[in-house]
Length: 159
Image (cartoon, rainbow, N blue to C red; front, top):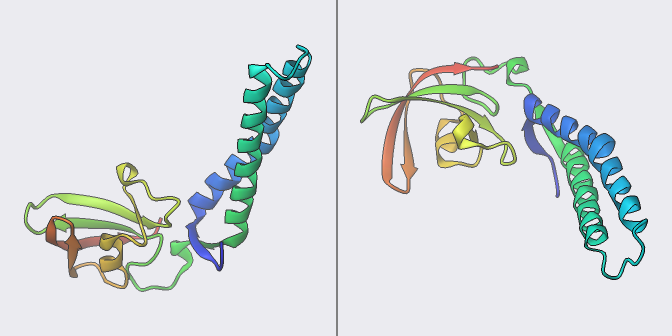
């Protein structure tokens, strides 16, 4: 992982909570499971031991990954930025589809935080790229796999 990558304050908090859980709950639990499996004797055909060791490898790998992400993150709080109503990373944007009249709300987040079901779209998505730098009232055209879509920006919020 080279350079800094953007992360919302909420995303950073979730990673810190995951790291805390991995270190204080998951790691001790797997160490106890390994000790328990060892106490059953022959390790060569001990499925419990093998499973616990595999789980330990996963947990240790995830700890390193989360620590690296936090170490390389540029944590951005859009509420603290002076952006005069522009759409920026971390902003929550209310849009109206010009064709259907349907409204949608998206928050622009980093790749790791993106979750379309939760209304969080990646900074690198076509919709987010079209929105960045625009203002409430602007109309944007987004190239989607289904063709061009036109959206009006109804509101830009910094939560």
